[in-house]
Length: 111
Image (cartoon, rainbow, N blue to C red; front, side, top):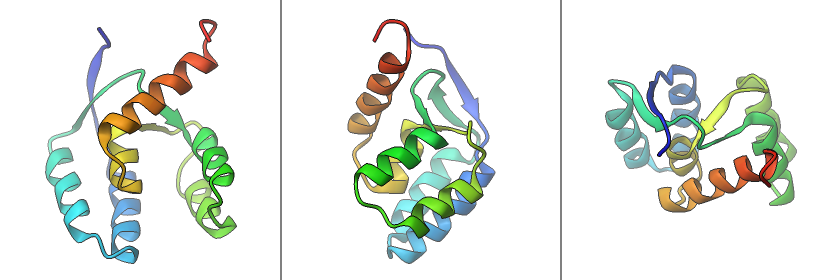
């Protein structure tokens, strides 16, 4: 059982607004905003950092401008939890949850 907490995400919401506007996915922004308005409840250890995310974006062929936008917006140690990744990349939460768990295991002494 992983510990849950309520995460305030104002910086992420501003970034997501820009991404969803550019990709013409306003419904994704509204859904995330509604979910996060009282604090986004997440499992504390199910995340990837900005540095890990930028590396994954590079491996998947994202443009330098996209990676730079992320790096200039978020601190290197920002923790992107699975609901944030799901909304940002339009990927099912189950998949982003598994990806984050795998990343945490690989970076721990267990992996």
